[in-house]
Length: 137
Image (tube, rainbow, N blue to C red):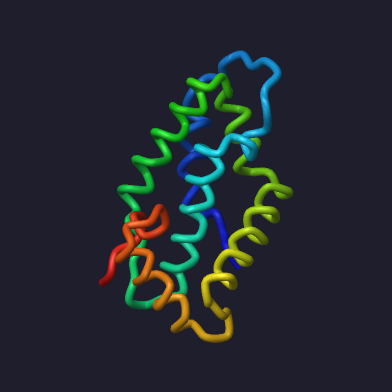
């Protein structure tokens, strides 16, 4: 199951800054530059939790969380809106389902942990968004 523990950093960062005013805008899930980064982080975290030969690049993820928060603010989203998005049970369930579907579509089987390693090493080799957040031990 894909988690978004890595994104707890975003929540902590958002709580540390005052909220900006917000107008009508799409949900953060509909902003590809936000959604795609959160998705990549969630998938990378899952791979690093299950595959013993891969570690998460936590410092890179932290920097990414800072940039993501700043970019969302530039787009007009307040820190409280960002926090609500990443803490939403509905969004977490949606992201989990999306991640599981993506992993399955890419040959990962939760009953075969080694498939997470195969997937993760391929993502690292391809320098994908997910692979950029992983490193081989």
